[in-house]
Length: 494
Image (cartoon, helix red, strand yellow):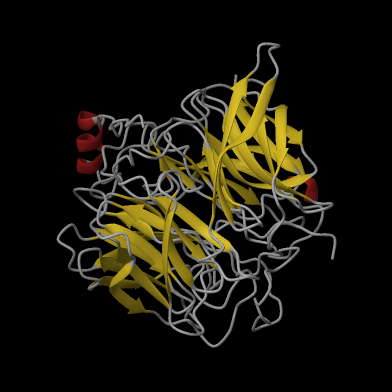
């Protein structure tokens, strides 16, 4: 789940699987350098990830969380050897959704600081400059944040008019680029007036699942015009995105996690698992409940399990459920070393390993309507990053490492190089946990075997560079694209 936006107040593609550096891994494991199943940093990690959705764009770049299973993994390597450098594209907007199509062109969904009208930008892949833009109908704070690229590189999004849009881009004879709405379907019959879609994802039949802040979960087919929906129990809201896999659609509300299917075109609940939502919203979270977009992962197909982080009062727990029936696989405390009991981010999931980044105390400039007061009213930004491994037979899980790293973005795991990528927010005064408008920000690469930073580069100082817990994306050319409160960072290696 990204931070809220700041305000002043059919071409199926096979899933790419990269071979492991087998000999190196075996030698390192024998020497005790790596936990079981871990690949050395810089080597390909041959781990199962969710299968490619034939109605989504390229794996790793089609959704905010990489794929429709929300694994937050990518088959792309990211910045390679050489000196790191960064460049900021100033768009005067918060840009939580940075995607890249099969043509290599970044498509970015932003909300300007002034006016707050959601705007789609098409970027130059070489420079990061905006080639053209298109304004959408304004909606709620989180409405329109989540979007994805379909198999024709069109941005699929629901705007403030409660319409499902497919926004395409093309180059005209003059050489100029143009964005346009290629298809539109009203969801007004399913989305009540005053409500807004917070998350959407395609299923394996090409239909689009969506969930609203008010607790409606629906299914739309913009090829036939059919829309069907169901209401979650009274009082349950959906404040994060949703995830799809061949087995069904995972939705985490402010009270429970669901798996839904729609064999006959009508959504139905397969299972529901309630979690500990605590006594109130916490500082650094945007709703009272789990901050997770549910993550599909598993040791074989990459979708045997669904993972979230709860909102228990003193120590939050990673909850892993069996996709088939909702049975709990394990429940493990996380973010203990940081002392920050809360995460607004989707867990990273690859094979049997899960990485949880903490957001407790993160200073968001605005909150969604209905977020309610936090308890306590404020706190220092604690951060924290924890790796948990699930036993392959699904009989429990173990914390591999737990640290106090202050990730200011949703981490991404490259399976090409076995590297975690993120941006960290350092305190202005070293050794403290406070935040200020003058905090420095660093792009870092992390060894997933140990949780240690192995490479870093300062991208900027001050609030212009605030990454607001938004997700980064590895582009095909190796650049790391990271949304900020004012535009997009492009981090590259010479």
